[in-house]
Length: 171
Image 1 (cartoon, one colour):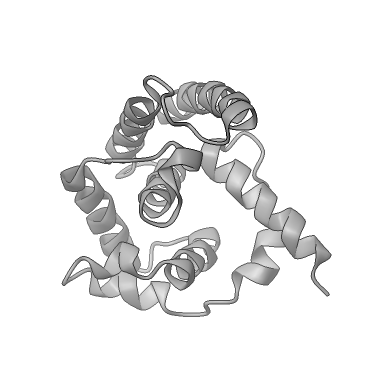
Image 2 (tube, rainbow, N blue to C red):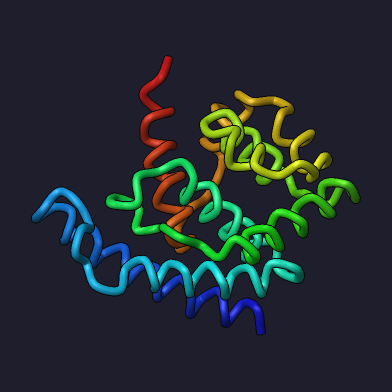
């Protein structure tokens, strides 16, 4: 069931990303784009609901949490995520980190997110295991991102494909 939900959400993400790209190309920002923030809030909520039993959904929910706190919403479309749901996503990730249940991909993604915007986690007084993992190997992404496949992975996939293109140019 979760796989079908992920496919449906990916299609919705792609639809909105195309729409956003067209708007940004024409006007330079998403200012005035009706429904964009609400759409990303809904997509995030659905990923968060799946995140306890689907690692891919958790990755996407974590990415959206980080994007909200690190990227310009006029470009990303991600704004005003429900703080209670954000908290739930972080708690799930913290529990996985405590149980050594994070996969190899999250072990390089989380330190990258923390490197770029540490305040995305520092707003919470706890989450010790998630913070610990997020502070380890902050430059591991430079190697591991290049090995990843980000096709059909929505907003997160688009971000990491762009990052791969940059990393391929580095010596």
